[in-house]
Image (cartoon, rainbow, N blue to C red):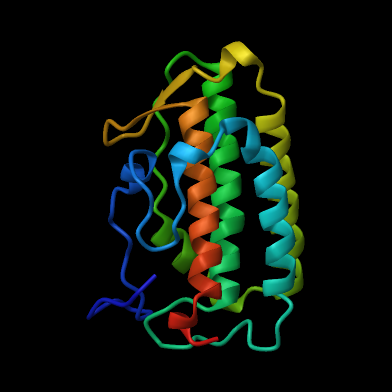
Length: 185
């Protein structure tokens, strides 16, 4: 996340609609949804969680390389919450016919939960648990359930298959965010 003038913590709220990553590769992190099968998402999320264990164990985990960019800890908190949110959405899609997802303001969550003050060891454990839980959810989806639909409040329509790949891009992208030399780690 990057800063916007007037933002209380120096971080610009992310207002982009990232659903385009299902149609073309991400110019930043290189993720290509077209080459990603929903069947691979569960294992990829588990591997990504292992990467976060290493990222969150560094001595500078709380430091922002720039006041306008989240620290590794703040990104880790966000990824944990992303896993929790997607698990809830997928479970809703499996339980209900074409549910409307509740809104989630990731920036409000970051501020309300004070990501910067959380303990890295706790965040690591919670992130791994959340990742494994959602990975288990994806692994349990039967062949005929991958096409079950769900809707975001902005009208974006997902199937369990497309939301799985969309979710994977989110965590891959945030790994790229913290590993990228542009952040200055």
